[in-house]
Image (cartoon, rainbow, N blue to C red):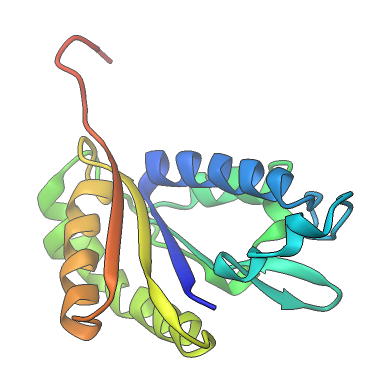
Length: 176
């Protein structure tokens, strides 16, 4: 099977990534705890692309990253929070304060080795890993700064694997 490892970075990346898991779980007939409740064998045909089978259910091959704990707490307490591996949630304490340099050079640089350790573990558990799928924003500090740092590290360590990035680009017409 050609497996994909999903990496969700920052608030935006985790919100989009969590919605992705909700939808793909529904398509595969999985409930919010990763148990199959579907009605067709077709729903299980390619489930190994994104999920590991474990303990009678399915667990997303996903790594959730942020530089502050609030987003992780929101995902964990959400309707699909129990779907993810608890040790695949990685977060800092201070955040990047919408600053690319903090996400890339300081706060993100302190967390990136831990993220790579989890990423390596997920990759090693694959039979035939196709690549990585990233969700992040280019407008904040974590998704943009740490996102680019992480993509650089992934490319260095896995030069022959695909990196598919779903990047949210900020609009000049939207004000905060």
